[in-house]
Image 1 (cartoon, rainbow, N blue to C red):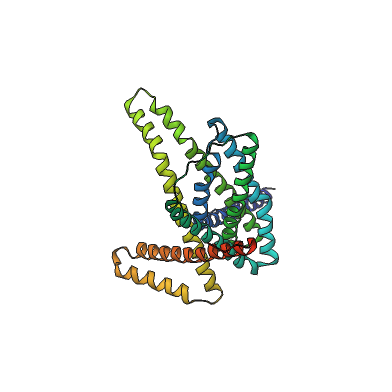
Image 2 (image 1 turned 120 degrees about the vertical axis):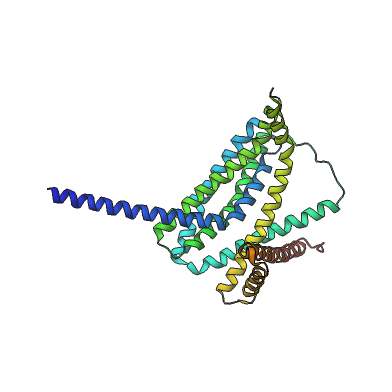
Length: 316
């Protein structure tokens, strides 16, 4: 009886250790994949606040909550099963799909850069007031969820590429963990950003001088923060998209560009040996970003050409 109990306890301990090791694997893989998807996550965070612009303050958080639920549904109920099916039946398709998503990121980054310069060249116009009706709210939420689907698919594709050689069970848990983690992080940050100016207005009316100063700083700093998020998001998309394309080329044996980037980064690191690691990373990130913007500009031009052909008018 005692020996049977001891054997049972040994089995429980062994199972617990196995579960802990599996959990560690899930956490480690999810963390690594989340870092690689950081560029998409930042862009998602930078893009989403625009969907609540102009609505009454009391509608902002409910709208964000509905978009967040739509994002989580996208990841867990649609993208995750497709990703697992690809991993099981067509693993060869993961890299091409990843490259397609990377090209889309490059396109988005290049389009934002081109739009920035075009906007500054164009004559300024005043935005017309819009009646923010329940129908428009529903339309904006739908648009946000559709945009999020593309970004979510890229996040999950990056994640799948990281764990494609692991067991199916681990893939399920890692994809689900990253999906939940990213959704909570993005929309938690979005909620905080959107309500920051409201908090600032409340603090600006406080009796204590320090709180009033903080409140004014929050209100005046929000436009700066949004601009910074937009710039960082654009740079991150170009960097991540370019990096994915370069690494994917290497997988297909096209090593000229990957080797050139590596050699330039390593050379810069050797030139500044005191901070070799940081310098090498910065140079490689910069080169990935340049490559991303070049690819994105080509895709933008191709899209404009196709649109012109379809509409029967010359491309601008």
